[in-house]
Image (cartoon, rainbow, N blue to C red; front, side, top):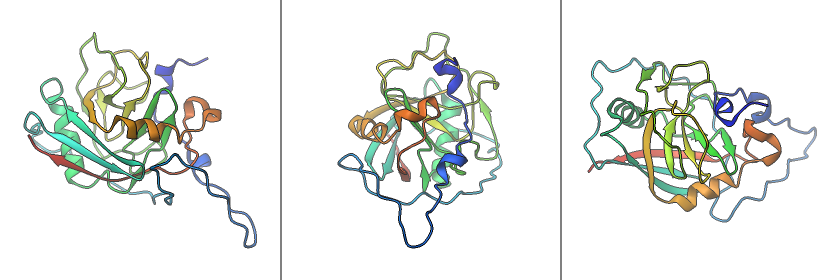
Length: 220
């Protein structure tokens, strides 16, 4: 059985994300969502191919990333001191609109919610990668926001995909670049986690789309 850490990879979920439509005029019944979540369509894939900026400068200390979703909004306090390159790249991608109109493609109840993939199937990225290993004593507890990577990539590697821990402790090794912490709206992240399908296990196929409408920076 694979560990949770090994499961925190970019998983190809295309087969589950593309729901087969019935014949004739029959329509799939809407999934009952938690209060506060809107029924939305699955976003179309976005082809992103950005060049890595020559100089990645972190946003000012105290910068917050406001994440607006179809289930409500939450804020990420960016840890610019501990992760200058990671937060700089994330801020750059947010300002380029990479995250706007993308989905949380992986939702594992009582573990993590994962988004930031422009392709929407767990395989996409921004067109470049950065490396910034976290401290060896990093602990991924509830509210921690970090960058996702495949299990074969080195510690601290990231593109655009990120995850929010919704468990008391995720039980992950210190392999994932730190982005920050949910500063407000933690109830929204828990609400998003409820849209996960427990039957899909660590694959985390959502029962219905949850869309990131936009991410904007509020500089400190």
